Length: 332
Length: 284
Image (cartoon, rainbow over all chains, first blue to last red; front, side, top):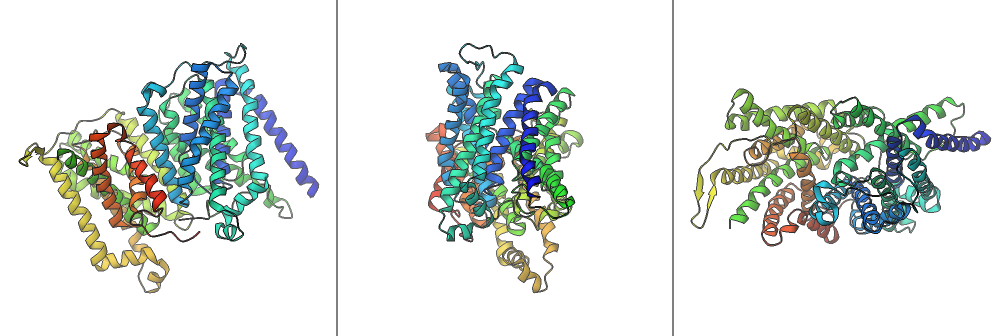
């Protein structure tokens, strides 16, 4: 029993790693890169939504700010791209400090609305500050630089980007499994008790918010470098919504699920646009409605449920998926 | 002076949308992300009625909100109700999905370019110091009347008492023999109808396009956070006030005109997290 549980994790990890390594062989390499970036973004959001119980509807602010930062660093200072991406992550985390400080004052549905509003503010600023961001045109011609190496082939660039994403995923996993992450889960499940135990709840939430934003920034920075441009689309509220959909589709609070969700959504997106179907929002919106109505645990959560139900003794679940009802326990 | 009027007029749209949101939130505890989409549908409905069937503005102003209200009630029955026992965030996500679907359906059919809608009233009103389009004056008047009427109905009539009771203590209200469930769909429909009404009013003034609701609704979210979502009075007042402040900011510091509402929201969160007219949340 215990042995099989111990065995399960390395197997999962190996499968995940092999998938990540083989992805550009299986799908069009630039799309594989998109999957990688969105997967990290979705996992970063899941740290906040699944393990802290806060639904941020404004993570585009961090993804987009990072995209612009990485672009500006690469264009004006031609730094090696990992430096630009890490700088972008730092910028996103710094931006998250004031936004998080104000937002964690509200919980539940209000938190979602407040983060959404702040992200919209960042959007307007990016639009207005066109001298820096290029406004409607965005930042174009972002170079990929790494000590003169040839990174123009998206197939090879995937493997240059992969370590950064794996670093981010590892960080997310460490955050969730650390004592700090345990406190976050306790806050999600019962904020009043966590406070009574002497944990400064708001400060924990803020730190989770900043870390999540930093990881989102890592993803957003890499995304901008891999595409060679950063546009207003990156800070738009639809981007915030898209990543939320990936997390919900994959399964809130499962870490693996959001990765899977991003793989599916990016692939679906790519499939629809190559098929010439003009209605991606229509499909993603429909998917979200169906998921929320029918599979609130998401794909990963549902599968884990089925597996654990089939094993004779109800094994303790591998995931920290919250019980069916509250996304957040701290409803307003 | 003219700018103050402009501010009040744009504030009246914010106020009507915030009012609809607050009514729905009060009754169902649901924040309706699709509110902006329904506003857009209102404006598009008026445009389609005119361009396809030549139905004039005044008929559209009466008919479109009714149709949208029925659609809203249907949405509540078919979708929202299924999730009402769960965390309200699920319904937030559901209505977000609905907003994407509605917006994209309209965009696929009519594209993103703005459709023209002729103003039904072309006269201007002479205020002595300046003249102002009569239509805008009418919009302001109508929205003030609507907001006041809703507030009066909710605070003075039996229906209002039931709705407020159902909002605050649903179980107790049910125990007193009132079928709370019966009021939920109509109230949701009513909130949606208000959004549609605002949409029709906006059609002659604003660019009618599929994206007109999406950005506006986020500003309205900021407005209700400032006013206090639980408070009808607060939401409406904040709507007019934000419209006014934005117009004044536009006059003196144009770069702030888009962002000032969010700066105000940040200030309110610092100073009074529950909103200016909201009550403190339960300590969670």
